[in-house]
Amino acid sequence: MLRIAHLNARYAGRPALQDISLQLDKGELLVAFGPSGCSKTTLLNLITGFLPVESGSITLEGKTISGPGAERGVVFPFGALCAFTREQMQTLLLMLWRDSGKQIFLITHDIKKAVFRASERVLLPPGPGRIVERLKLNFGQRFADGEPYLAIKSDPAFIEQSEYVLSRVFEQREAFV
Image (cartoon, rainbow, N blue to C red; front, side, top):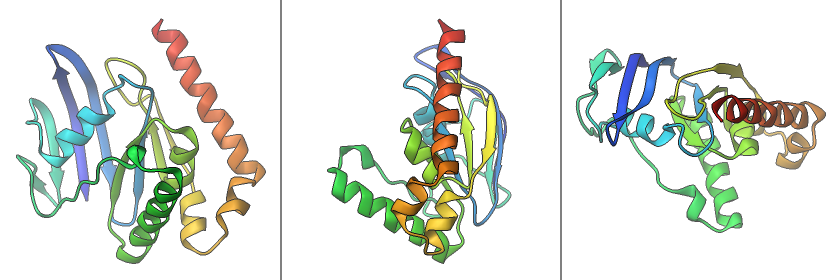
């Protein structure tokens, strides 16, 4: 289990993350979602051990994360791939998740990918990033279980969740401005 407790972080001397607490159990695929500047990458870098924890804690299977380790893998960057290859990589990721039973933590600013992939999605607003909403989802699991990609993406429930997430992002941006 990955556990993040009361994590605070700074980036370039400014508050980046504020009181982040998460638990990610085996078999879960958690997506941290938010607009550019909400510190998703800072959170990922802290989880991987690329940045030191200054306040709060991050543990994996009860052991404090204090630097990079072989028990954690990091993949960068799907966004730089062509659309066809990116879709293939996303399919592979969901199949690996299903078959391994491992917990996976992803970051994105793409609404449809956040809704499609996650078993749970957390929303971080612009600076400093904090969790303003958690949402359980099952579209990625449906795909991993064999339901066709296009059937899921055209499901009214998928479209409704995508529109809901978009509206929440706009609400957060308006509150920030």
